[in-house]
Structure formats: structure tokens, C-alpha cells
Length: 123
Image: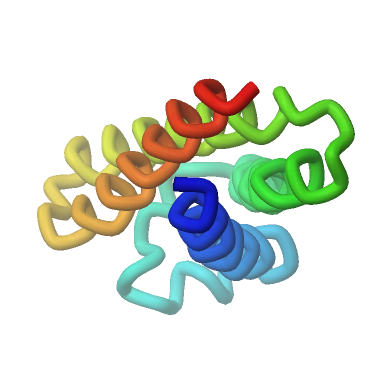
């Protein structure tokens, strides 16, 4: 089970790091040029950058505490935080009637919950 959780943590952390890095470093104007990122028009530039920063922090929280054996409770808490972020993403896409954009945050949210449950069970 530990290996499975590490694989899930690594995949989710990589996805969050890439997505968060893009949101945190690119401006809203550049992001909105991508049809998959049309949702950024509903938010301020600082909000989009804040979402990106939260995703980066969540990615670090998935790996570092458990990997360094320091404050391991932060790993499942980071997973819960990312799950909550994905619920927010789902709500935005549902509100905008972007049905094709619902699957990625739904899957990432499910993976985050699996990680949280698995790691809370190992504390």
C-alpha cells in the first residue's frame, strides 16, 4: 500500500506542480488565450496566481513531510487541501457549463482523497 500511495503522491504532486507553476508564473492574459483556461476570465490576476501558489504548496506538502519524516501529518492535510481545491475547480466548471473540463479535477480530487485516507491510516 505504501508504494501505491507514493506513486499516487508523485503523480498528483507532478500534476499540481505543473498546473500551479503555470498559473503562478503566467499572466491572466496569456492563460486566457488557451481555450482550456477560459475560466481565468472569471477571476482576478491575483486570484489566479494565488490558486497556482496553493497548488504548488499542496504539491510540496504531498512529498516533503512524508519523505523527510518531519511532521508527517502535513501530507494527508495537503491532500485534503488539494481535494478541496479540486472541488472548487469542479464548481467553477459546472457553473460555466464546461462538461469536458470536469473530468481532470474530479479524478485529481479522488486521488487526493485516496492519499489522505491512506496516509492518515499510516500515522
